[in-house]
Image (cartoon, protein in one colour):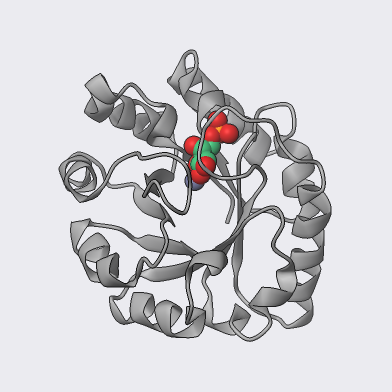
Length: 217
Ligand code: DX5
Ligand code: ZN
């Protein structure tokens, strides 16, 4: 399964419901929702009330990316707001294995994200407890940054590992993904592409369709 996940961080927040509807109607299957706490990353974004209100307007898979230190006390509430996937950062969880179980206990898919400097080896004892690995291809905190080239090799190594272990784990890539590098990232083994500025800067309907053309190629 291949999917495009528009990141609402780059949407027009004054017309968020309309932007969400546009990308959904254009065929996007996932909606990527970035939650920032001003501690794990040097910025703040949005939280539960926003997720709840767009949940009423969309049937997309809500892919909630928690860029938060110690997200554990908030997991149940994010699930209750309508998250379908909750992704936590390996660097932010003292007991990652427990946190993944906590997410799955909410009947939500569990994702683990790795910053660019974090090795794949942190996944060794949790990969079989994980539904999705989110490879950050920029340092998290802001949209509109450039793709870090070493991410491609990381994606490739992770895909080989997942194949070798015969696991069913999605690989999502987030940061600096655009129409120009999407094919290369898919070829490396990713199957879900997050795109913020490449979708919402300009005409988001046409941009989603252009991504879908690449995904279905
Ligand atoms: C960055 C966020 C991303 C961001 C990506 O910290 O996690 O999801 O929206 O933005 P682009 O696609 O513009 O790099
Ligand atoms: Zn993100």
